[in-house]
Length: 440
Image (spheres, rainbow, N blue to C red):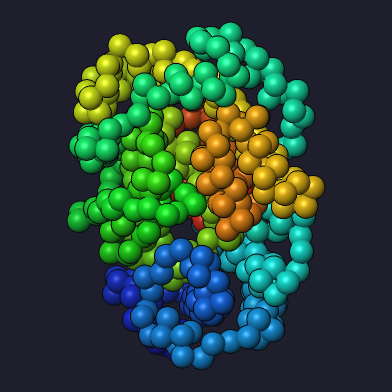
């Protein structure tokens, strides 16, 4: 028993575990495996600048990865050996969180090995890649489904020309002027934060900074820094429409990525000593949960009618726009949201080599109602992140179904927030979202 406590104390000190936590022998074994996992993620990050999205573990581990750059073969071999060790250390416990932790490490490592293979030249089709990296496959929809929505929308939009032309003309009334951008985002962030704090307890000192950047393939990004802090960047390459204020403030901030990372750091890294959560590999199953909760979090914080009221009262005035147009604007956006899977179809065809970049952009314009500049930006995103696109819409739908299946419906706000917070603090991954007790 003394030897187990000594090992636990050493591991606890190394992993920044508070002294009050005494690790069991099983926890100590899992933490040793988790350390190997973190170091493998950092090693792969030396080959892939996009891979390590966040890291706030021991700085010497990053320095070690930088100093001794391992080959793809070495990383894959070490990952295979770690998977074998995990298999030999089953989570035989009634504690669901511990079982989920074991599944998490197993699936994250499997995705790491696939990412190594892709970087080393292996070609995967869209669905094969998304299943291997993100633990999910998006449904394939026929163009007729999109055409029907576009035809219905066309009846609502005034003017002449194509539906895309009329949609762009309609939206032009709702662009946030550049000189009002910061004030509008500040108002949106405050609204998202106050609504989140009504239901979620966050640690003291959490905060984030906002920067406005250009020349990116994405519209917004959260760079989690650790110590409950984030850097959120907003891309200003293209016009920013008024709906993006709440969308980005919720998705990147409250109750989205910032809150997700803060709760993981507080509840798993600090309180339980699970060091694997101090690193976030972007191309992994974790991303579907991260993006899905960030997108669904918009609806959790702002149910549709409440959002329109808040936009009228706060966001439209901050942006210098006429609040009288808010209901009409969001009515149109509800139609366009039904086209979200068109982006997946464009990416599927593009990554599978069935269409080229020009045709992918044209597909987005035709079936997703992307303006030409926005379609071109989205194709650049596909070039950089490939099948990652499924994490936004499929992820949102999977998170919604998981929470609503347990009573977290729009009419039960308290239950919805409770389940949402639990998921943000959990090791649960996509294939565990099918049913509340799924352990696949």
